[in-house]
Length: 359
Ligand code: 13P
Ligand code: SF4
Image (cartoon, rainbow, N blue to C red; front, side, top):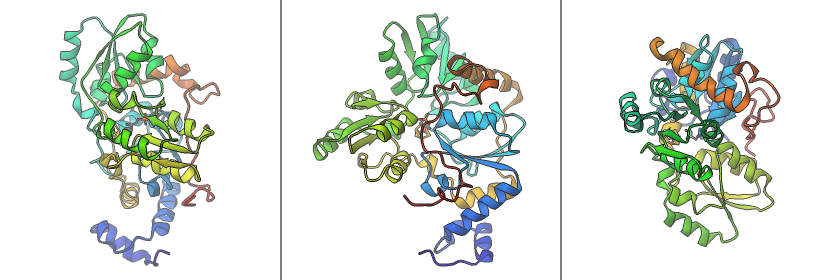
């Protein structure tokens, strides 16, 4: 039971330092966010790696592909993006008229930061003539230097859409090697970037977990080290992992991916036993957003994400090409035949049966 905190106490604390709250009245904060979102005609999009309490205030929870599609089609005036910086940038590129807010600007992606425009140009010079597929985990500037974008859900399909045999893939080497193994007739030139969170998982930890749960099915995200995802029974993107475990007849799963996804599946799929490795593969960058920072962003239109005009059109084209190749034209994103659409939880914050129900 959360002790009651008076409204003015919360407001004072928000103005000073939210961490000074001895106990947080989550219900009050959640109601305040939903009220503000309604008043300001804002939609809250939350990546599934976020804290559960931040997932629970969202209009939509999803992976990077699903959230970019929600961002593209929303009619809200403001998009509050509880994800990392490149995701908010992608939302802005897809819906330029909207105000896009990132509640905590510290929320960047170290993998995206591993490649600059100069790095990509140098890599292109080393592999001349090959088209560039960039993972969505990249800056708008890097997207503007690329031919097409992909997510982990559609990377194989995107790379395979080229007639060229040789393709540059950047920045994620985990996903790049995965795509290469699915498409042996292609030759990928893979940039040396990686996800520090997924790379925390080593083969040793997987062996330990397998020994502890010998009947469990091992499921991995392709951002893991190839030495790790090679040990898995199933490899898939976030939405594919969620759908796979939900639909599987077995009841024990070892998930080789980020803690937020694992926590969400544990809650949604109880009584299935869903565990991950130790130490927890937790992305600290995803956890910056808190209910307090969402309120501040909404109240003050704080931390607006802008994309440099000089690169805007090129970066946008890189993303819309991905939709054209995988799903048809961007104008049809709302259509019914979306093969890669999100198959994870359908959180609608306004549906009180889903908010904070602690399943
Ligand atoms: P997806 O959301 O596409 O699965 O990507 C995982 C990730 O690393 C998000 O940063
Ligand atoms: Fe970036 Fe990895 Fe965190 Fe995703 S999980 S935001 S790729 S560091």
